[in-house]
Amino acid sequence: MDLKNVSLLLLVLFLLSCQEKSNNNSSPQTIVDLTYAFDSETIFWPTADGFKLDTVFVGENPKGFHYEANNFSTAEHGGTHLDAPVHFFAGRNTVDAVPLDRLMGQAALIDVSGKCANDPDYRVTKGDFIAWEKAHGYPVDDMIVLLRTGFGKYWPDRKKYMGTDERGEAAVAKLHFPGLHPEAAKWLVENRSIKAIGLDTPSIDAGQSQKFGSHVTLFEHNIPAFENLANLDKLPDSGFQVIALPMKIKGGSGAPLRVIALLK
Amino acid sequence: MDLKNVSLLLLVLFLLSCQEKSNNNSSPQTIVDLTYAFDSETIFWPTADGFKLDTVFVGENPKGFHYEANNFSTAEHGGTHLDAPVHFFAGRNTVDAVPLDRLMGQAALIDVSGKCANDPDYRVTKGDFIAWEKAHGYPVDDMIVLLRTGFGKYWPDRKKYMGTDERGEAAVAKLHFPGLHPEAAKWLVENRSIKAIGLDTPSIDAGQSQKFGSHVTLFEHNIPAFENLANLDKLPDSGFQVIALPMKIKGGSGAPLRVIALLK
Image 1: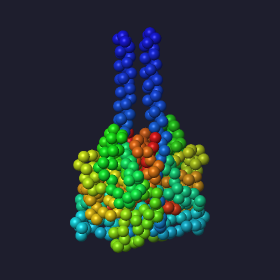
Image 2: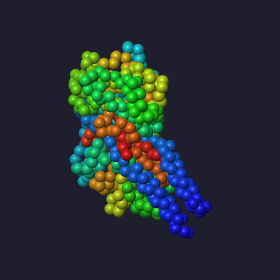
Image 3: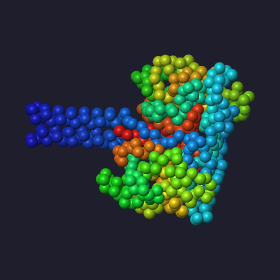
Image 4: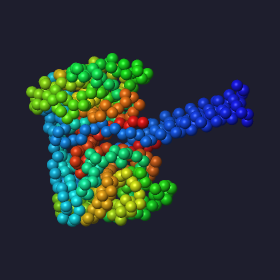
């Protein structure tokens, strides 16, 4: 083997080792937890039951070891949770039936926090999606789409986060927080093929919504929604993955969700 | 460039294209759900409260759209769930504090179903781990280790799955199902560095355990356990990843777990 061949062989080995390294480097990812913990302060809809933890036992067991265990009760729709399509559309997926491949994948973050800063009733438009797509050069097809309204910074202050800290039916009219415009939901289902959508407010429809048009449109098309997401300010606007695994409640209309982002 | 150089260059390009293809092919993965759904049949410890779903509303809303929502209550430790280290060791991680990187990663499946078929009290030994390591040529360090006892095939038949379908304190002595031998747990924490461990029975200690030695040893070392895993018969014994995301209960000793495997 002459010198040129040896150099070429070394080049092969070098390039292969570079590839291998870059493969290995792709595995140590940064994990961002997009989930709020459930406790007595966790924010629920004004009409819903909150989260309650009851201690069954905590302390030294007579057999000589430490033991602790609890029971808990909660509404399906509170804290960081998944809305299953059946929540607002009869015959669509219950939470246990949402396909897992809808809950994992590449994600897009649409940052509308600037627009929401002075307008707590802001509704994300078709134009907001198109602006993101123009900036990135590709559509949001097959992606999990997250909307950052910036309202996450108010958690767990109910009054700031959702417009009122009152409870009960009368408080619903006082809700103010951003959401997705029903026309934008219609545009999404007719023109794009997204896996799921999520945001950092209590509901995919804005607080002042009466008819929950974004819920109805998305859920008719079996697109689930993630609500009360945490830490959206720690995400870039593209180039990350989301994994969202809800508690598997048979026939549930929603469930507590543990949701994370993987950043390279 | 002579012919030999051209061949070597083609070899470079061929090898690089092979690597690239194998990278691309790694993306469409098979997802296996290792989680049982929660319903009124879900198996809990004989002394624990079971899962209860209460309908809040289901039907046509006066505003003209379908709506349904539920409340639920449950013990932390039932169905497919995570045992947080604090469950059996004071001062160790609560479920919300278990680091996410312990809950995701390469996995090993130790299949002891042959040994358990005729011995419902079988306890997985150090030898079972070493046999897997010898067969695969590497230790279980930094991995999520799953034990397949084969008892998953009995779910949701309580009598077959856990030895008794009775409830209450007196039923505990009648529990029969396989688990991890406390000596093997000791060997694991002293000689290996695993991320987490899981199995297809109600408890990481076998049904006849009195002192829960495997729980205590693992949890002292902050190694969480996944219990009542489903579909372990659908996994190979190596070359797959596990992602296990528990409900984030502040201060919880455990929680419902949604856990999946990713197969290439």
